Length: 126
Image (cartoon, rainbow, N blue to C red; front, side):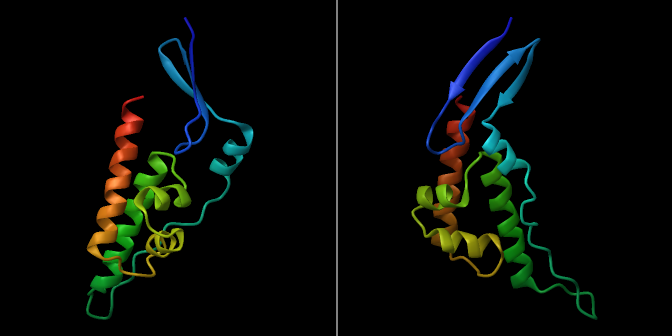
């Protein structure tokens, strides 16, 4: 038996789910599929070690935070703009954090984390 459910919420991309033979398929508009499959910017690279084998702590931390935010944001289908709005921070700020160009303060990271937790909870409740 096939089951079909449509979702069109502002925070997440429009999509539909289709259950066939116990498997769930996700249907998205063609334009969104093209955006998802287009080459996305590479994740920020971790810095290399110096001559003594030490890694720069600040830059390594920035990259680690950036990659985690990107992973979680993409997992729930949020754009940078949508996450920034949900976290009540500027999109430019989130962009610089995700590119590992700045060290975000604790309050900003907490806002981003809360927004991602809300999105993850909403996503799981579907």
